[in-house]
Image 1 (tube, helix red, strand yellow):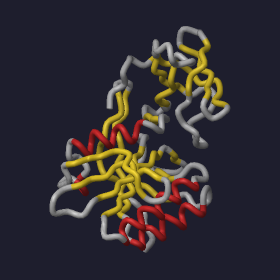
Image 2 (cartoon, rainbow, N blue to C red):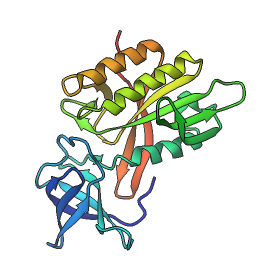
Image 3 (tube, one colour):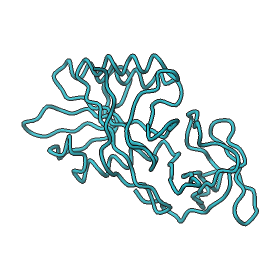
Image 4 (cartoon, helix red, strand yellow):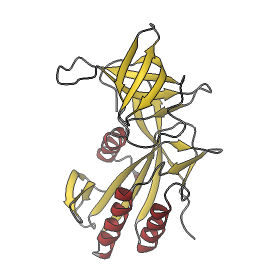
Length: 236
């Protein structure tokens, strides 16, 4: 997934009201940018962080900048836009890059299922069970190279796990795909201290047969690309 327009650098002043941020551009100008992330953004919203914004000239948009990336002092990157993972995974599914479901040739996004829900992707192929794929954005790192999910309470995420379990019970495949929008992670685990109910739902869904997979990304000012699989810690 490539950004539509060249990104511009700046320094974060503050992120507030969940979807707003103030950024000081390298030119010295202070601008208000859309923050496309409703989560806690632990470690990604500290004052002074180097960030990258995507400008736009869309007359329908009130804000002329969208916050896309954090560039850390150690050279690593994080993507903060929670809409990016679905776009990245869609490209990867259509290109057959997700090894676990590479045999599926038809990819349909946003298909109704469960209780008033839409699955991120429904994969179909003659001779194979339908595969329901949910995608979650991951960008929390607190120790070593551990990516963690979630970074805040997500009742919606727990609901998705229950609905995927129902698909397994109905004879389909169900896959939870965690996409890590950081370049400094090597494995994934749940964060029960931040959302114990999600961790419990994860364990229950895993026992029910939901497949838990994780991939990381390569990130630059050009875009975010699907990369390698990472191991997931699941209940023994």
